[in-house]
Length: 224
Image (cartoon, rainbow, N blue to C red; front, side, top):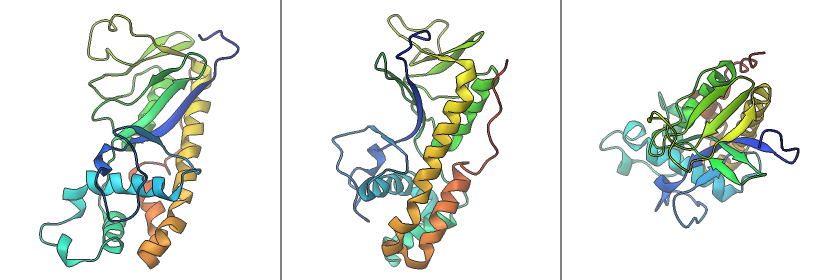
């Protein structure tokens, strides 16, 4: 685990895609069921469409006032509503993977991408909110951080659950890598949105950067 020279830990931003099932305002990637889609600067256009579709559906009641939806053209109107929203949330967060063991800890239910920077708390000895059903959580053991896939609402981890172990000194670098992936995703939005939204295309990336805290200050350093 933590001492394995072949271990590669990856922390990456993800969004859960089930909310975009049946979305038709613009092309989205075909997926067999609910799953995490990794956000990065390497997404295909239909995957970008999937992400923005999830955001549109998940925030439907907030960005679509009653009586207005049928009076405006989609998708340009829908993208405009997203860029003008007071607040946006999305199902997801940061996912942890250990490539040497195959272990994956994904955000639980009700964990939002908008709270991904709460992972900075783990670098200074606290546990971020990672959702429930399952309920991932972070355990601090000196210079090692254990990320458990479940049991955060229980006195002890569930029988058979295995954690991912991360050297505490590595965590800021891993969070910074996730931050870079989010920025890479945002860089794709204007060219993706241009044929759909015209002059509003350039507002989409900055709006999501604000709502999902991509433009916040750098994370704190780990405790020595």
